[in-house]
Length: 584
Image (cartoon, rainbow, N blue to C red; front, side, top):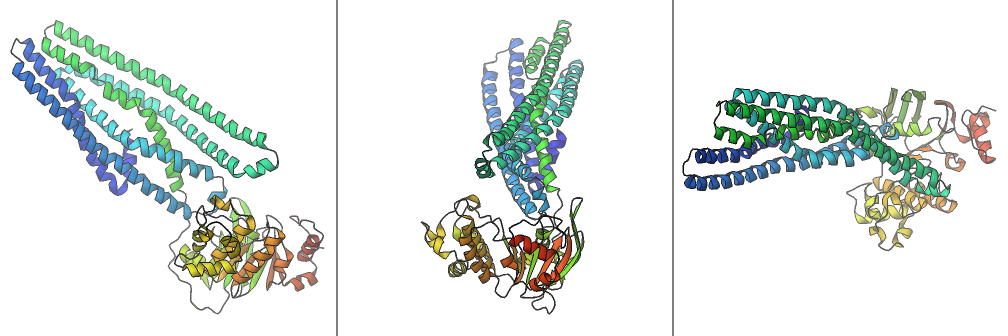
């Protein structure tokens, strides 16, 4: 428990001094919580001795009021120091996770971690943020209160002190034993919460496919199963927690009974006075409450510990190294892009094997091949969404690992097959390409991307707010907005990853016009299946099984009569090119 508190305090960074300052007020509050009993004892002791207590009673009333006021002030200051710090700390932590996530390799997001990220940023962080910081203040108050109580027992009588110490130790040992089991089940419960989040995301994002193929029953069953498993995990968790709470209650009751018994024996044998016995009875009702409450709250702490583990697990994922010190030269006579002996693998699966090629400035290089051959991986490595396992990727003669990601992204614009637009105005979605652009420049980019007309037909024109992911626009409209964004960015290298693969014929012609505007005087890397997109390329790379099997212009490859010719013939006959196609 102390380790978890220390762990959270250390996570507070520059604010941990404020949390430690709050401990002082927790101690004061813990001391003040027991002061009314001492005041009451003084009044009762004087009364039992037959003295007039009228004057003392008035003073005691004032003392009680002062103690209560100081307790409220200590509580307020402690809460201000800790709770406010908690919200600020986790606001910073969310920003830190956001910064961390944007520096992770894209492979992290393709390994099924979206549900984990969503669960951590919502459930886990909210749990620790809203409960933990106020809980720390309460726990420290309990801790100091119990320490004060044990010291008082030894001052009162060493035999009572020993009973109190043994009872406290028994509660602590029982609490520690419970935490081990509860921690294991907390991990299982939080893992199921992550799976449930993933299932909800999959269900909502795939709703159009689910409805189209009449899979509502099957898909909802998967979601329902996850809800059932979550319910069972929570019930199982309570089955683990409840018996330990009963054990703690039994120790608490037994310790209180033993303390009462020894006090009765002491007063009967004349070892302590009647007034001292009465004072002990006043303390008895509150004697073990702090330590009992301390470990009764251990359930929440172990859940929070599991949450902290998951938060730290995400933060521990290695980032792409972004410490490059080099800069791209303004003028360079050699190749704009160069892959030299590049190999890459996803986990154990090798995708690219020792590939090499160069792209001259203002030329178009097309990459074709069957699904899974490594085409898109080439584009992803150029944009450094992943790092190569071996070999080098260069832009203008500079290894892309030797420059910052910010510099690299200034050199590259990408148009993907699947476009994502943010829930914001169309204007803001376009101006992301160059945030310092003027409104006139944004409008000009929209005109070049052939999306100005449909934008102006919308109710609020460029200020129209579109749905999340661009849900209120058609696929072709979203694609043209993404191209407008790239036109505004005006980077020297453009990557088109099957940009027209999933649009209708009408939109395709507009997108082709928009792309023509985008790629003027640019070095172009095209990942495509459509023949008319690539037949004018300066060089075509035919990739199969992670290897460049053929290269050349369209005419050269057709004359060669190999994989590429086989590909084009199958395209013309409307037959999908399957992985592993052999030369004719």
